[in-house]
Image (cartoon, rainbow, N blue to C red):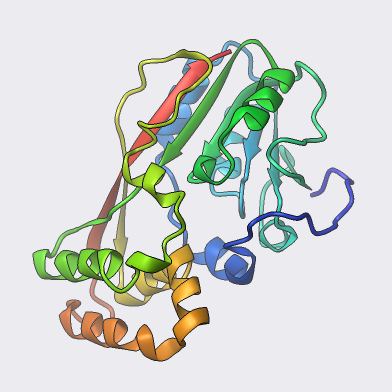
Length: 257
């Protein structure tokens, strides 16, 4: 379901349009407790804006708590893969230029994306669209914790080693849990949340394929640079269909406007 705004390609640094289908399939879902907390600190529940929504991993659960959720993203490919409900609408828009009316939004969320566009222009747009007393929340997750010491070490070594030169500079903000970002709002004391899944090897590798650094590695050096890691992980994982617990700490920053 679309808002009816033009479906044109915007000029932005695009790391994920080419993996939009994989992003929709393999990116993990966020815990319901996160959205329950966001709802509890938001005074009104008429409209939530999910900025840089990708394929809707946060938009969908938000719709259980708000009358309407508008998800925006600069990538038409990502939104083409998005799914929602009668309470969700999607529109192509840059983070600092949205089709939303002044003081119309009760909650703004940014899931695993604030590092791509954080700055005065974006925060000015947040202040423009949010009602007084509304809430802004952004969260991120970094290194995976895997219920196999040997698998976890191999994954971390791959992230820090071969992938190291291919991570965009903005990823440093992810690794510090957004601690280096100064929020221009009255900060809320947010609880700790964890994203936890049980994944097969193929499910985990599908997620790996959506990482921005993996796409840049393959574009620059080809699949041969990725294949040794994939082959070794197949040897270490407990069977093709075996499941391992994979968890991520969510680093949440929230404030009241």
